[in-house]
Length: 494
Image 1 (cartoon, helix red, strand yellow):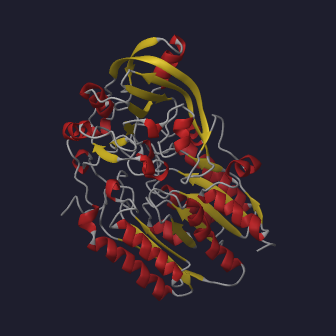
Image 2 (cartoon, helix red, strand yellow):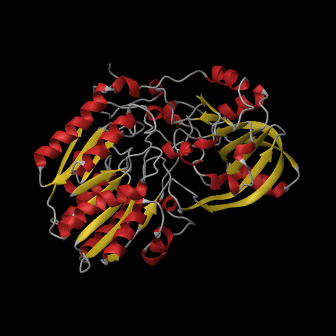
Image 3 (tube, one colour):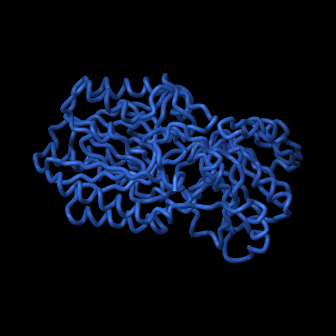
């Protein structure tokens, strides 16, 4: 592939259509301004455990020439502004028009924009319009809501096999290698795509647990048996559009019948296990009563505030779980994190060592689920003010730079609270280290997370209590008004 020219690009966003968090172009940048391009993007992602890092590595290892016109990734939130989508898409399409032998894309697969329910499908349609016969390889998140348009316009698709997503780099290689083989004349990829009408709860999607563990293991086995890529996508249920739900894509060496057979096998495994993908939340008061009797073991008890996870589009500022912890009198707690730039500014103005009374969190209303913003007033000492920049230690997104903005660490005497200015999910130990918090030394660790925390922090936990607070990442589908979702859909329609 040494004489070939590749275009590599990233455009990643998981859209929670119920989220009030806006998604302008600035959300896709690292320090305001514009998304990374060219050499800046290469330097940021080369050597990282990401899909884009894998595409760069493959291009450089094979000696191919490559161009990286844009690397744009945003934490999940509401629908993407048209301006942001058009800006990023135009850079990708322009690079393709300038000429290349193949396009390799690091996408998410569950992007909704103001004008397009299927953001990735629209991006690929524009690419196909510019270059009808171009080989296109796409790496997708396991939570992709794969659409017929995405399958029609891509040459090869591969998704993560793990949740927490610790195999992003490997998935990038699995998406790129069929394209490399095609360019070298060693394979003619054949791809099969399919869906089933089911909407698994995210709290039941972990690949460390059944039933997804067995399905992903079977996908990996198919690759050992000769598939170029075999992927089962659990889907993202907080996207109210017609393509939400499970899907599978299998790529073979010019064997469409085998690709179809394997694709249907993965989908049948999921459908047969559909009841095990259903999650029933426990009332918060009951969860906190259980938590009060735990702790004191080797490692913290993790209290999951899983209704308000920024990696699923949450506001990261609902206060029900944190308020419950404070009022229950739980001691030796570290809480990560509340998104509240205003509170950070007030704490910084007061100064380290001072005692402040703040109306914390609750700044954003959630009209899609009928919830107002509800700040929680508490008094705490300002323990630290820090610059929240770090690189992930891994294994998830290893080496990728992260910026939480200016952060405050507040201490009530019983609960130490991280307050941040840019939303970040706690899945990496480096997020705590930059704040001067040792999570392993705490009795309790409150995390606004669902499953990803297990990547970098799971080994620390002596126990887990799932706390159903409030937020647009609710696991109670009864709180979500689905208007565009195709029906019937399990478990909404039994």
